[in-house]
Image 1 (tube, rainbow, N blue to C red):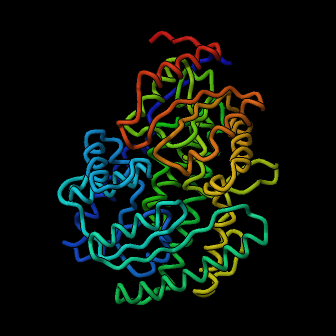
Image 2 (cartoon, rainbow, N blue to C red; image 1 turned 90 degrees about the horizontal axis):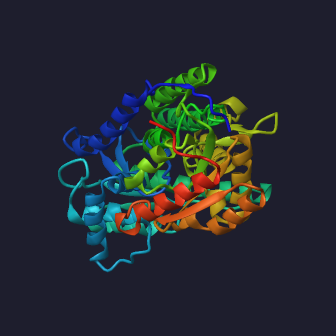
Length: 436
């Protein structure tokens, strides 16, 4: 492990990403006053389809639930309001925060919780469909759930899944025309498809740049940057921001500008973090360790494909691949197939072996020295198979430490115990605290 000290400096694009996120959430508060339709969703809803119906404002429930988790007092009030209605404590913590905020009629960013005109959701995790249904029932508004598909990507499976999603998408378009009173706009749809694909590919390119030594980004920063596709992947401003961010990260790599100037150990973090405990990543820096990312942050909002040299890299967009998109039907087909083929995050939810392969590849290509694994009781999907993943990493010679917690329920996290385990792990790697 190197003891060299690198140059470091803050990200120049940092203020811009904070402004994008804050303005996004504030737009929901102003939608009705500005005469715009507002909708909410859970899961990966098909943004380009909805965007084809005009300038609609939305809140996606998971990022909102994570933002609530960052504020432990607000999160605890939301979760207790949710559980007081008889719901189980072991369901998705994002769901508990989001619905609790709704039931309290308190919006994290100020005022009452904004009422949507309709609810449209994707269903890729076990809670999404019912979660969105509860929102629609609470407000008495129309609801549509587009069933997602996860599983192994053999060619036969891909074609069946694409056909299934395409058929549902046509149903969704008919439904949206009735709900909004507007017609599907192919031009808007084409623009949104291209923006979404470009945005997800750019985030993969940015993550890929973190293979460099020293790493230009750290996990704490990436947990802010990665949210842009979740909120606004279909918009040109998201693409413009990521192009600016990508160019800055490239410059940092070329000039060896480090996220952690004392980098001498590279670690991955598995699963979402406890959002009210992001200082864990700053604690690592006291030992000269940098968390260079993780499976969740890398793959949730990006698209990947194998490169000519056999390594993992950003996926080409449908346009770059020359996929025909001359009319609505071809565009729907292209978008569904591109996401199913090149968006890998949910494959790991079907079998631990799939995630084993992804993790081992990441450890090798990003030159990682070890893994910190959050056994997250707040997300069944990302926690599925984690102990099998741990064994696979250990068998391959990678040291692993686990700690227990919850991504968005502050009641289920012991900070002292977590830090004790991580400190012992860092010392087992031969690291000692650096002088300030």
